[in-house]
Length: 279
Length: 267
Image 1 (cartoon, rainbow over the protein chains, first blue to last red):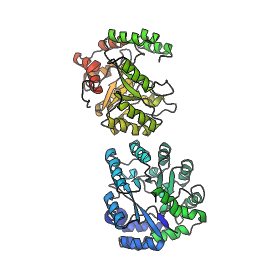
Image 2: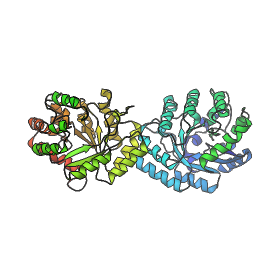
Image 3: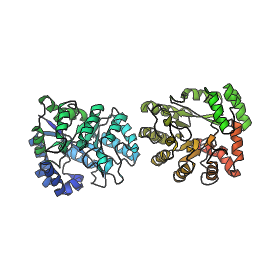
Image 4: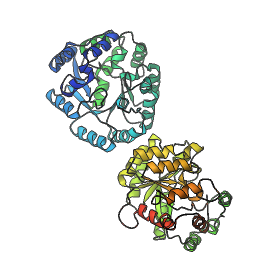
């Protein structure tokens, strides 16, 4: 079965300067605490090894999100374009923009989409003066994305900001309410607010859920994510490893070990993502 | 304001004026006579798009402006609750003689503050199109006094520094606070209109601001029909404006903001 991994940052170019690759022990510890492990490609910072790991696991495409912030590192969008070109069809780039300059941000989105990017990623909780996802200053950008039918990935869970209010689902709820045709992916699945984000997904048809690393092991909320996946979220659930935090092979094996209904598997592993990416 | 004449008359009486004959008769011909007598060359007519106080189609404004050349300048009324329709109205306004848009979000059935995120795509468009935005930001701007509180207009002015914003009703009664906001946001114009009145609190502070750093960003308004035009002008003349400031407030600032002398105003 073909797989799209919806959050996969390869060890190449600017990614190697972000803290997830620089602080090896931190990343390994976060993986270990979930009960899994990082991969050999991560230890060696080798995209060649990563592609082999993807091949062995059956991962056809990894969605690589850019990053632009001074807290956990930046990856220029041109680096993403170069990686996508070096490995044709294997990495789908999502452009990161700094929303503090609205006009520069929209111009950069237009430039990246012309280069073949598949969507946009925003992580406003990671700016030096953090914003919530429903900060008014983001609304002109959301309007532009909705009108241009560009999918949006949020860092909406886990360490999405300086405190846990930044992953709280009321913010993504308001954005989904105010832009009802904007397709929004909750990266990290608003973990740990699992019950609440499932409520938001239930009432907002344009929210896609991708808890990635946060639904493995014995972490709280895992069974709830799984029930949603097997139930009303079957068409809006996206598999992801959050590589490098989890080894792509081990993450997929762990995911396939969960009690996923057969008729849902292909959707969450491939079809839902393929539709979002327009493949 | 016209359909309920008794309410308008009561409000006018409260500030020492009366309901104008033109308002009582609903006669624009009489209004033009009153403008002439009061020495008012030009009136800014604002559209309105809300279900609480009634709506005025922007096409009606176009017709009024066309029928009385040189006497009225129009600001399009925008209902922001439907973003695409609102953006279309802004687009239509840009090309058809409107000098700005008027937004009154506190008057929606489900009221919004002026810095509601859902307004931001519209502010962005107005900033890009160089349209002046007139906000109903004082007086009965919403269901409670938080809607006239200046922190909301402050955030909009902060986030759209090239957008020229007029505080219609001057954020009254938050007079000291709005003067602070004006002091730090050079893209904000103040137009207290009917609330700048010797009988109401804040008049001294408004006038001191106009005589000082707000000399070029202070705009006369009557808020007709809530004040008769001649009374509104009389009140202005009775207030202790510096003579050279009165000319700016009564005429030159508005002409510059509206681009009536050619070119475009800058903050």
